Length: 166
Image (tube, rainbow, N blue to C red):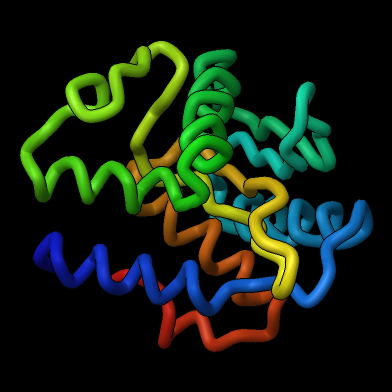
């Protein structure tokens, strides 16, 4: 799918996938939903749900068989993108790719701390804004992104087929 279409689809996802409320139980349920999807598909991924702040508050974390410590580092870097820019890591990565500019050139921030690869998505509460992120690492970036969107759709009772990237 062309970059412009993917970007438009991700912007639409981010506009649609908002929680009416979000607490520790919601985070746990979202994390378990993603874990169940991953286990049933034998995906070697790390799943992280966190609330932003200094320091951030981990609400759910699991590393499935086949992951390495590098996956945890990818989670941190992708989540940093969402925390700073309040949009999904994949959306920012595709935006940079479309505009043929690197992250470091555009923002003068270290790649060691940020990863504009698919897999981290903002947790948005209607009326309150973005309070955290849900992140997956271990699959190709488009699949990481799609898995997170699928988990969000399940939790929010939204039609995944109408929101997923092709």
